[in-house]
Image (tube, rainbow, N blue to C red):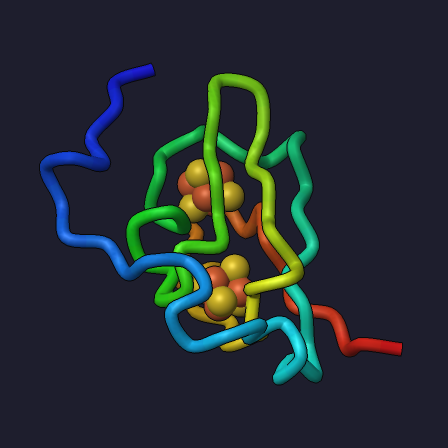
Length: 84
Ligand code: SF4
Ligand code: SF4
């Protein structure tokens, strides 16, 4: 996959601490719906999403549960679920 990290300004993971502690909702990934478009990776304000050819990985240590990824996903492959 094309590495475009160097071409875009991205927030650095962990710059605001362990933002996963802020979360009340978390994104759940459904690989069957994903088309690997990278939009979730591009828009995540915590840089907590990694997309490769196979899957989307969410780093829950830094995902703050803002829901932007689920909102932006054109395939509804990410859905927000309340934390237990
Ligand atoms: S935005 Fe949705 S479809 Fe695109 S890579 Fe992320 S999870 Fe997959
Ligand atoms: S909910 Fe999605 S966009 Fe928001 S911090 Fe977590 S992974 Fe990033």
